[in-house]
Amino acid sequence: MRRLNKIFAIGNRLRAVAFVAGFAMMAFELVAARLLAPTIGNSTYTWTCVIGVIMAALSLGYFLGGRLADQRGRVADVALLMQITALLVLVALFANASFTTYLAENIIDQRAQGLLASLILFAPASVVIGMISPYLVKLASTSLKTLGRTAAGLSTWNAIGSITGTFVTGFILFALIGSWQSLSAIALLLLAASWLMPVRDNWKTRLGFTVVLLSIISGAIALNSSNATSISIDTASANYRVHFQDAYNGQVVYLTSSPSGAQSAVYSEDPDKMLFWYTNEFVNIADITPRPRGHMLVLGGGTFTVPRYLAEKYPDATVDVVEIDPGLKQIAQDYFFFEQPANLNMYFEDARAFVNKTNNQYDLIFVDVYNGVSIPWQFTTMEYAQKLAGILSDDGIVAVNVIANDSGICKPLLDGLNAPYAANFSHRQYTVDKSNKSDSKNMILVYSKRKVRIDDYKKLDVPEQRPFTDNFAPIEPLQSGCSS
Image (cartoon, rainbow, N blue to C red; front, top):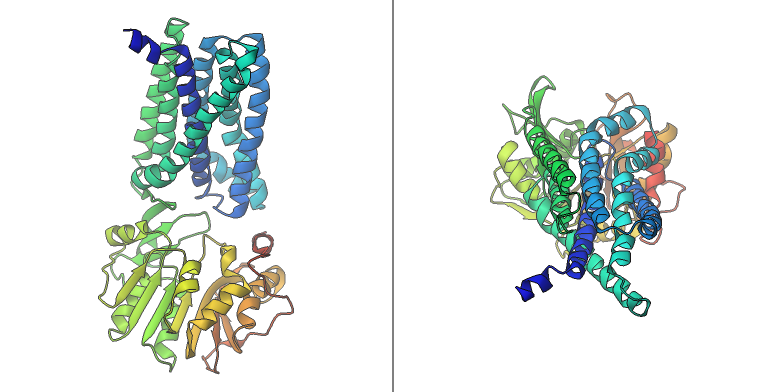
């Protein structure tokens, strides 16, 4: 009994609460960015807004928590703060879809979208959970002589919780359950930890609050499971939605991971037929170009429609595809009719890392590395283009899918994307999706070391802009300007 009492001593309970608060805070931050991805995007701007707002909210919470702890200093307050945090986490979960959709439809600037979404959805819970830490220090302190050690001990447990929450969420939760379920689990954890505080204080109110929160959590999980027109799938890397609808004059299955349209799509009745303009351009280049096709590389797999087509069309060739998210293979098999041909090699890693280290030589390289409408910055630099040129055979071709324009507000973006390739390939040409009437259009940029002519492609000039480097690649402002 004495040992049991020691385990459940108030000091150990406070350390446990510090651990849970740290765990919940980091898990909440990681899931928060995922919640914004389908409607606002998953760019550097989004992450900057989420991290910056949450850190500012925590700071405000520390200040308010310290003031309140000095005035009250009641153990029951910690339980109440944890339950309020759980409630605010659930509010963010339920309000996310409608509020972010409103922002996306009414505010053009992605930075403003991310900032407002983070302030409204994530700041309230972050402020309240930030109030817990100074409260714990106040309750655990018994002497000024040991105050430093007490604060350090609680901070250590909070940090251990944060580290654990980061790895558990990133490596386990995202691979096993969805964003809705992850936030529901965070709320449930906070709710359970609130009962670590002595139950004799306001236990009826706390019990009632617990019942209400459990009902809300159950409703959140049930509501997310009720959508029959789309399926939400979380992998270790992203949140995806698989949609089923009539489009493009047929029954279509398509995949989204951002607000900017479909990442991949197939016709249900003819999955081998290319659906998008740029995928048709890719396969046409392979079909009509009088160049060797012994070894081909596709950077950016999606649901592997292009690499599967190439492997099946050219059974004597070898096709390598590089996709950062291994979870997409299962999604492709389950919903996009994907079966891996024997001559298709799949590499699940960052495409830039693959290009940096491979010793293979390729005759055709197709680059489609978009995250929504944004190309990650590491694919816009001189160093990347130099490596790509190094793995291309002398008679080879690089075809790059970009979203920009050869005139208007998107011309600076095209120049920024073109510059590193133009500096490393002596022959350049391009074509534009003329069916798209917006300022930003799909374009295919084709580069080679030796002259090759593709019908209806125009010459692509060398831009005056200097190529970006791994040290300095401000591609986000150009992409934002093109989409505004």
